[in-house]
Image (tube, rainbow, N blue to C red):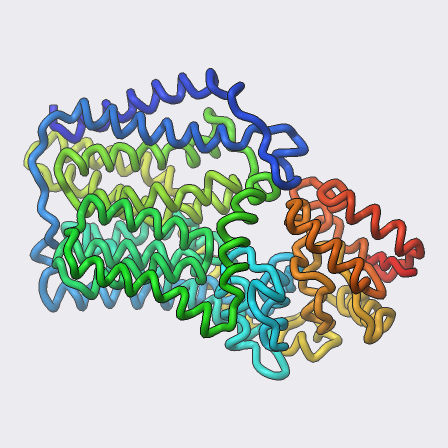
Amino acid sequence: MPHAARAALGSLLGAALAACAAPLIRPFFGVPVGGVGFVTVNAYPKSWDYVVLGLLVIGAVVGGFVACGAAPASGAGLSREFGGRSGRRSTWIVASAVFVIMLFVHDHPYQPMDHFHEGEHLTPAFLLKSGERPYRDFFVLHGFATDGGLDALVLGDPPSPRRERRLQTVLDAATLALLAPIAAEVAATMTGMIAGVLASLCAAAAFWIPVFPYFRTAPVLLATLGLLRYARTKRTAPLLLAFASATLGLVWSLETGIYALAGTVLAFLFVGERTKRALIVAAIAIALPFVVLLAIRADIRQFFVDSFVVIPRAIDAVWSLPAPAPFSAAGARYYLPPVFYGFLLALALRRRDPRMIVIAMLSIMLFRTAAGRVSWSHTRYATPLLGIALIAFVIEPLLSSGARLRRAFGVLLIIPFFFYLEIAQNVMAGAKLLAGWRARQKHEGLVAYPFATGKGIYTYPQNATELAALNGFIGDKTFLDFSNERALYYLLQRKPPMRCFDVPMLSAPPLLAESMAQLNANPPAFVVVGGDPNIANFDGVSNRDRVPELARWIDANYPVRTKIGRFTVASR
């Protein structure tokens, strides 16, 4: 039996043993503390989910490594087809095609605003443009660039959310186009490279989820590309790309930046050369985020406190969701990638193949984002390298084998991969989105926002009427948004009365204590206590259940209630 087949069987056996042990250890784990959210209200031991995934990966690695036995070493170089000018030209063509297609698929300039998600970055951008300092004057959850830094660059004056929407579309397309050069580093043929890119786009549902922040995965993809090229060439520039992408990722998108940094360090320990040059490159990379923080006048101490103390202690309690049932379609989509990455790592260690190590390490780290907030979209968002790995390390070797039986098995494997990666659904969704692009450039049935801050975008007539009435009622006074419609601060151009205006995160004791002190020192004139019920009860948990102390303070100090459309405003 070929060593790869033995490794696959060993990984499956190791993962199966880990899965059998997982239910036995669940009683040893408790409910997260440090905040309030779905898992705390439902008393779910979220840390158990992470241990289960860790056991699956470890079981797959150990089982595959032991079962594989001795394996021939693989080179890190590119195939001859991608080694010359024609190979580079092909890669650029594929990357350009992906970029253009994704531009049209993800372009939704007039989609009605989601006051919760768009408020995450529009309000910080408004505060930045008003002269506020990041981290000191406003709380940053997802990373500086993601939470307002990029928006502030393009909003303009008067500000237009359409500009930041266009920017995200371009960044999403550019990030997804990185899959082409990554695939070219590991694929054996041009056909394999194209198939790998398509498979990865489908694995990430890039044709299917048109408005999703794929650009946040850029640090992971850039680090992967840099490490792959460094493993092949041993040149300094790719190593600097990998290290710089990983460290700058902390201010680009905190979560994926941490995963990029962890994956890069672990992969480099296996594939890198510990030389003076590497130390210099690492030192430069470490300095870069500090340069950025100084340039944007950030509070560096608060950056470290929020990013590495407050958020890690609270994030699972506030925003995580339970893992799906294992014997379900969602369970297969969730549990199989870690097992495959474990198999890939076992095979990589036996073959001493740096390409496999890089892909496996970065993929395992990035999958942590799917393990936390478990949902249909997040599970797919966390697997952008899955398709490339399946094609380059499984399908291509089988189809290029001299043994007829192995080639036949490779052909048969394409069938379950086709369904698992949901290729048909992605193609149909992508075709529909491409066909509807021209229609999406119109805003029929929508009206202009009643404020200059809504320049260039449109909304439903009822929403425009309600927002205008809310603005007229509040006047030039300050307000606290307790409804979770965070875009209200941006739309009405009112600064939040406390540093952390993310109501669910106020269930974290340090942020709540800080905010209560700020509210008592400078109480707002009004409190928006009700709005869109879907936003006010995110994950089925109301804001009153998340932050009961703040709710009691509002009731005690703002007893009068006024109904304005969907909004309920509390006043003295």
